[in-house]
Structures are given as structure tokens and as C-alpha cells.
Amino acid sequence: MVRAMEQYLRPGIPTTPFCPGCGHGILLGLILRAIHGLDIDMREMLFVSGIGCAAWIPSPHFNADTLHTTHGRAIAFATGAKLYNPKLRVMVISGDGDLFSIGGNHLIHAARRDIDLKVICANNMIYGMTGGQVASTTPRGFTTSTTPLGNPDRPFDLCKLVEAAGGRYVARYSVTQPLALMESIKKALFLEGFSFIEVLSPCVPQFGSKNLMESAPKIIEWLMEKCIPREKAEGLSREELNGKIITGEWGDV
Amino acid sequence: MAWKRIKASLPPGRHYFSGNEAVAEGAISAGCRFYAGYPITPSSEIMERMAHRLGQTGGVFVQMEDELSSISAVTGASWAGAKAMTATSGPGFSLMMEGIGYAAFTETPCVIVDIQRAGPSTGQATRVGSGDIMQAKWGSHGDYQIIVLSPWSVQEMYEQTIQAFNLAERYRVPTFLMGEEAVGHLRENLEIEPWVRVFDRKKATGRPPFEAKSPRQIPPMPSFGEGERLLVTGSTHDGLGIRRTDDPKVHARLIERINDKILLNKPTIVDVDGFFLDDARVAVLCYGFTARSSLSAVKGLREEGYRVGFMRLKTLWPFPHENVGELSERVERIFVPEMNRGQVGGEAMKSSQCEIISFCQTNGEVIRPEVIRKELMRLL
Ligand SMILES: Cc1ncc(C[n+]2csc(CCOP(=O)(O)OP(=O)(O)O)c2C)c(N)n1
Ligand code: SF4
Ligand SMILES: [Mg+2]
Image (cartoon, rainbow over all chains, first blue to last red; front, top):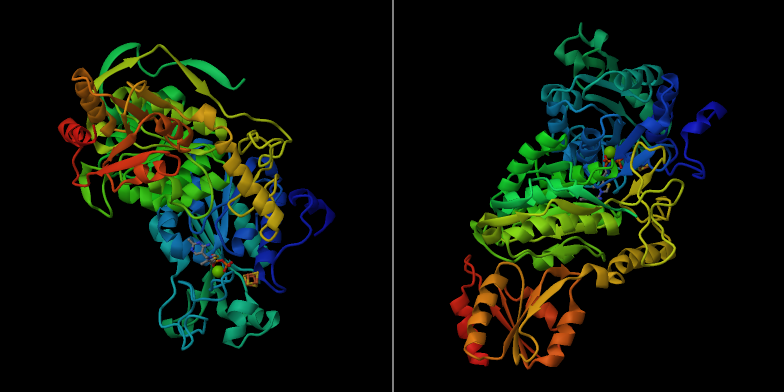
């Protein structure tokens, strides 16, 4: 990271624990750049995370108040802190397993209540930390350590789910779209009310390697091919959109 | 000094309240300004009164989607600076266990009220029990300490709630008020003193929030938003909060400290009550609602000249082993009546020098004085 960004990192924490090619590191940098871009004082920020690789993005790296909680409950902890001290700017950063499987109930309720939280979900479509078990975000047919014959289930559409629950600002980008993603994070920081960003984040060892994507470039290529901007998608038929991931913004944009 | 005197939540004098309402008044008097909970019988009146009273006092009330989120929101609010609480019963208490372990390990002051009902599982939702005493101590995984108070009257529901907040703030530990359905729904007089002594957590800037100079000391606890850039985690951490998940020394040191800070301070935490103990041959060791029936039985027998005594545990955890041990050296037998299968009786055996006789009643009803009297007559 460049010198100007050092102030955002907690002193004395030498390196991130992420595997080479992990998308979580890219997201870490983009969140801090968005905060830098808005010139927000890190002492006003509270970062809350659950359990998983993604939950390590803010804790311990961010030089702000950080609350690394239990698996699935980050949004509930954040709700308590934000309601008691509304001056805190509260951002929740956690994984797909954490926020949508074990913690899905808290997420939809926080969206319904319109608590002013900025929730960022690092979605690698897998349980990374525990060894690549199937998640509620794993595409149908994909191999994981608990679906050796392919995932029989459909994945959630995270953005549709949050939008239906009442999310004010809802967006989806891949770490392969860094500029759009950074602008989206800025928007979420700026807007009031419940905002949610799904960030597609490659995980080679636990997701890619079991699905013919044994290297970071391969999984990045796959993501870039799969992602299609909302504007482009609007003109396409159902068949043409099959297997695609629509990126962009919904709600108060 | 972190002690201060503040005005009680109600005008001084005599009031008429249920135990659950008295808990809410105690919380407001103690300075509680955050409540998160989920409805459950027989504790819901606490939540309903808190919704009303926090609205009047500028506090925050939130009805969460379950008890997992309730205890989590309480912990989040506590780190944001609140005196925070939740209340629940049996099934909800079970759901809170992981969050309670998190609060204990992160040394988060909070108050959890469990109005015990007949379990296990949904059991008898409107009936009484004392089956959660062991769960309160051992319900979350790993080795940690908590504080548990056991009220026997509406007056104590009020006073011990205040005490629970003071203990939680002073020792940075989850503190439990373990009432039973019978005291939660009991209505009786409540005397309100004009002033309440409350303890506010100690703060300091630039000091490690998870490390103390001596095992008895409690580290300072700043709040989020104060510029301390806190690092709070339920993983094993050093004094600054940095995760150290594979260092045996750091883990051992932290586990020792969170246990020692409670156990070494036992003399200032533990509170017991005793009557007729000087010449007693048999002592009744009791707590909670059962202590009311016990005292009535003991008084009756005393009037008839029987040498029977009474000891009531106002603190259940850390367990008053010292008091039980001392009592056991003076009497021939200790009788322990309980609305469970002998949870406190079994614990008392660890420190008792004399025979412990457990009396267990698990039918969802309170133990009547006649029953205790009959059992005692056999021992006298
Ligand atoms: C109550 C509970 N159940 C299970 C676990 C084990 N566990 C730790 S991380 C994790 C999955 C995390 O997946 P995700 O949130 O997608 O994060 P990722 O590692 O993929 O970034 C699980 C199941 C736990 N810590 N707590
Ligand atoms: S296991 Fe996957 S998600 Fe976890 S650090 Fe490695 S690449 Fe990232
Ligand atoms: Mg994941």
C-alpha cells in the first residue's frame, strides 16, 4: 500500500493472513481507499465482523474500533452499538456463510428496520475458512468438500433478498471491477439507512481448485466472463442471462 | 472512584409491584439505558416495562428477532458505552449461551435476567423451576467465570438488579439475576430508597483494555467512538486485543486472568444470609423462592424448640464454598431443598464436611413450607 494509506492500517500488524490471490485482500484495500476518498476520520468508524476469512478484513488490520464477533451475529452486535451511539459510522464486513447462512435472519431484520449500517459481504461462494464446504451461495452443480457430486441446491440471489427485505441501497460488484466497487462503497458510506454491497471475491484453494480453476488468473477470468453490468443485462433474454451474474446498483442509487 | 450516588427511578417510599416490574425499575435506577430482548414467558413483563421506561428516560429499547441477536446487541451496546441488559427464560437462555461466552471472554459488562421456568425444552412455560443454575455457570464452552445472584422477593428483584449492574461494571463480567417464575409474578410491597449507589466502569486512555497489573485488578474499558481504536475479539487475544490463536502462553494467561479476577475477589462479591445458626444441629441451605418456604418452616420448628438453622445463598456463582464449608463444621447435617434435581446440593458437597441431604421437587410447583417441615422433622 502507498504511504498515504498507512494511516488507515493498525500499526504493528505486519501482513494479512489471506492466501495468495484471495479477493479479500483486494476488498480490504478498496474499502480503505473509499474511506480515504471521502476523507473520513477512522476514529468515527466502527467495523464489525463475524467469523471466517472475510471477517479478518477489518480485524485487526483497520486502524479504527473493530469488533470481531461470533459466527453469524455481526449485524446483531452492530445493531446494538449503532442504536446506542448513532454517531458511530458502522460498517459490517463479513463472508457469505456468515451473513447469509448462519446469520441470514439478522441481515433481513436489520434491512427491515432500516438500521444505518453499511454491510459488505465478501462472497467467495464457499466456506473458505473451514475448508471449502458448500454455502448458500455456491452455484448449482459446483463441487465442494460436502457436495462431492455437485451442489444439488440453488444459490441465493443476495441482492434480491436484501432489496426485498427493505435495503435502501443494494449493489453487487466483483473485485475485478475495482473502480466501480470503490465508488459503490463511497456511496454506501455517504447514504443513510441500511445499505448492502455484495462483493464477489475469488478463493482459489477452497472454491477454484475443486472446480477446474486452480489458479488466481483462472478464477478471475471466470468471474470477469460471468459478470455482466445491469444496463447490458436489461436487453438480454433469459437464456442469454443463464449463469451470468448481474452487477450494478439497486434501490436508492 | 467509580462509585456514585444517583436518584432512584421511582419516588421514595412504598410501592406495590410484581417481581418482573421491580427488575425493570432496578435496571432504570442502576442507569441501564439499553435493552434488547425477545418475548418469552414468564419474563416478558420485564421487557414490556423496559420498553415503556426506556422511552421515558431517553434510553434505547429494541425487540430483536431472537435471543442470539438479543445477547449480541447487548454486547455491542455495552462496548458503545451502555449499561445494557436482556431478560429471558429457559429456551431463550439456552440460545444465548454462545453470546454469553463471548461476553465473558471479551470482559463485557452486561446483565442477563433469567426468570426460570420448568424445563427442559419448552417444558411448562408458565410453571416454576430452578433448573438453570448449572447452565448459568457452565452453559458456554470453555473455562470462564460469571456472577449469579438469586433473589427471593420483589424487594430483592429490585435491589439485586442494581447490584447486578454494579458487579457487571466493576468486574467487567456478565452478571445474572436468576429469579424463578414465582418471584417474577409475585406481587408485594417494594420500598424505594431515595438514593441508589451505582458503579460505572473504569475508563482510561492509552492503556491495554485486556491486561491488568495484578490478577485481582480489572482492566479499564473505553468505549467505541472515543478514539481508542479498540480491537475486540472473541478469539484468544493479548492485552491490546490482537488475536494470538496459537500461543499457549497467551491463552493460558488470559484464561487464568478472567477466572482469577472473579475468584480472587470472592469476598467482595459473595453474599449469604443466615438465621438461627448458633446452636443448629441441622441447617437448611437454600436460595431463591424456596428460601421463603424454608424460612417459614425453620421459624415454625424453632418455636417448637427444634435446633434448626437457615442459610440463604444470595450469590450462587462464584459458589459460596467458604460459607458452606464453615457451616458444615458447625452442624450435623445440611438439608438442601431445590426445584431441580439437586444442582446446588451437588455443588455444596464439594466443600461440605458433613452430610448433604438433597430434596428435589420437579413438578413445576413451588416447594411448600409443610413439605420442608416434614422433611426436616425426619432429620431432627
Ligand atoms: C457457531 C459456529 N459454527 C461454526 C463455526 C465454524 N466456522 C468458522 S468460519 C465458518 C465459515 C465462514 O464462511 P464465510 O463467512 O463465507 O467466510 P470465508 O471464510 O469464506 O471468507 C464456519 C462455518 C463457528 N466458528 N461458529
Ligand atoms: S481460504 Fe479462500 S477466502 Fe480464505 S484466505 Fe484463503 S483464498 Fe481467501
Ligand atoms: Mg465465504
